[in-house]
Length: 402
Length: 80
Ligand SMILES: Cc1ncc(COP(=O)(O)O)c(C=O)c1O
Image 1: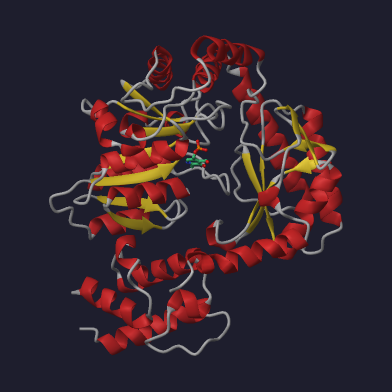
Image 2: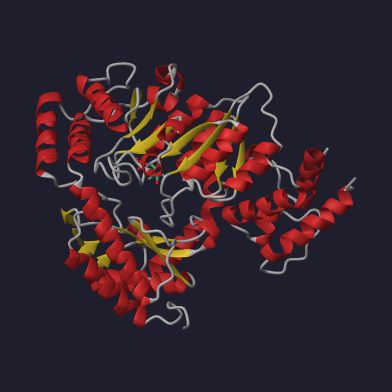
């Protein structure tokens, strides 16, 4: 009989190569975290430029105080699921606060963003339904689709015409149709062309779920995400988000206005069969949601920082993941060895960014992925640009020939 | 009408750019395993196939599709 782990040998061996190359990004350890933008890694203080900590809220004194109080008053964990003993008044309060901020009638809190996608997608779609997903969707969307048992059809990334073509030859039969998009795509930082997708929605009809994982708190005047920025909120039926990025905690949510929305609490196994988020996580999330609501300067600062880094990289002649400015700024590298070498050199020089390699990247590109924080100072951004300049100069093939 | 053989011939053509190691292609070639194409590459190839034949191939069907011949059968069904 075949050994079960044998199938993973190629991945295992590939990882060994990375370790040998001294670029074990997966095994990276933060020895200490000093602030939203600084950590000690390998005995050295580095600027963090790959944390998705968009609002820079992880060390906010009010959030920390709220978390401490919740730990003392409610204990370390809930030891139960939302539908058993795991719903505290705080979970409800957070759901109400999110519904208010998002301007939605209903909101359900999940234990992670990954589970929010699993729960929402498998709760909404079943074996008789068809889900249309963007080719570059996050793994949690793919897995949610699998869990649903629905027919799953992929369309080309950010291509409303391709979706329209697929819808035009699709017979929904007895089932419904769900289309899933993301506000900001996590690898390249590009937004979905939402208004164009809505035009397709008006022509063919479907229900739309938008994953605002990277755009909640970030885009739109009130931080409600891409749907707000694009002015099409009433056409987006369901929103998913996470607390692991702009909220600086752990957890996730689904929201919508549908009159039957609350039924998802009994239809979504990833909601029912896992422990609810811990009191400390809920309390810091609630505090962070209030800050997203009441401290628009964070959003402004984040966008200014993003613009500064984007322009700085452009001036260096780097090839970026997308032309639009967003807090996800991905630098394209020619191949795997150069990406590993640059990532290593950057870390040694004092800046941490994410490394993203195929097959985890769209179109098989090699990326040094930066994410900007509102907590970065102008000096931080300029330092990141300077360190990239230094490392790029030593790496042939990084800058497009003039 | 497109025959099974014509479909196989067209699929083999479409697969050529993904066959970076130049493995000889037969109807029995296991697309992912033998050609050493990663999961994202397979999905890109499938999108080419969908556009070429103007059909949709749900992900659910793909889990049981390994060889060029398997895929030809799926395409034939979807064209019918
Ligand atoms: C688009 C997208 N959706 C969902 C998630 C999952 O969020 P979480 O980290 O809370 O599980 C992430 C990030 O990890 C993401 O990038």
